[in-house]
Length: 400
Image: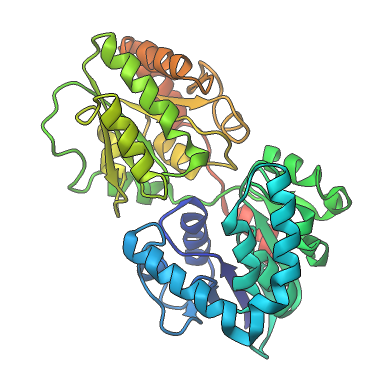
């Protein structure tokens, strides 16, 4: 039996974590002993792990890193990491150097700096694995590269590498230590290779695995909207972070309301931008029109019941939320950015728009006012193929 270790930064409810769970569910426990290490020691999706996967964390906290409780737990974890094996002192030159580089670019990203601290303070194990997989950028990539013993190592890239704020200085060139690198889309691969051109021959595309039948069956379960609103509903699923550009969507909602449209916009997700977004919603008088519902265990009834699905972000890797909305036959509007462009064929199975209040509002208005177009785009979206078992073989072939 082959021993395979997976490492991920958190196990919260987000796209990469969902993709990892689906991958783990497809492993044959008779052939592979899968272990998982979560760098932040937290995340609410641990309860969904297959029973044959070993969770290596001790004192694991099954709370969302985006919740208030989860933020407290994360701060405790970071503080503990700083004093574990004198990690903060050892990392100080690295932290100072990269902080200065960020300040020069006027873009300081504390989470990118802290991944190195959490990685270097992670659990120490003498166990040797046949394959070790870093399933996210940042901490998990650093940990597997520097602190795991394995015959083969693989890393996954889920975002536009440069736009997300990563650099080779932050990484310490860690990707040169990997045998294979898997990007979740063609655009993600291109963006990564612009920084690591010497990795071209070992970098492949690995499309996210999605259980189509599971999405469809869960969409039919009880749940979804309960506010008795009788107008048209817009839905977005995503973390409340700067990447998702919800402040632009709020401005677009203001335009729709001022135009007299009877619509309501709902967002499923949590994040560090909530208070800023709530203030903007209050300022524009949209308390009843732009609804931040928080994270939910089952978003699919909401997707099925929505009239339009909108994903207007600054950049993406390959959004699983978009793919899930497509499976459910939704008319989709996405911003014209890296990642999104690869998932929607304009006016064939969805629409693209500029990431501006007017661009988003105009696209939504066009879809909501044309039932035939919504139906046609949604039907085409539902026919889009999702990744099959051949994707998983790209990873497991490393063991042969």
